[in-house]
Length: 100
Image 1 (cartoon, helix red, strand yellow):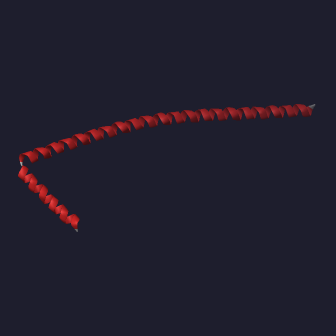
Image 2 (cartoon, helix red, strand yellow; image 1 turned 60 degrees about the vertical axis):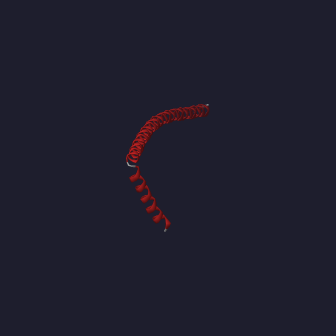
Image 3 (cartoon, helix red, strand yellow; image 1 turned 90 degrees about the vertical axis):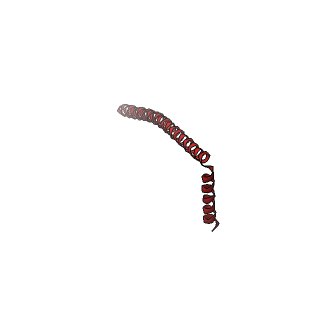
């Protein structure tokens, strides 16, 4: 009978150990799931911030390009002959450089 009691006690201890391990694993999985969700939320936040910054840079670049274009167009309207000579000289120089 003592063997049955000891065997039952060992089985109970093993069952407790298995339950503790399962509970510990479940707790660890829950903690990991929470960390993953937090990382995903952070990633979304940073991605949104990066997109906003990129849109801002693109808008500023477009505005600057538009202003530069308008300045060049105004200069060409003010001095068409000079602009034509400058364009011809630039074309000649590029043709000489690239022709070699």
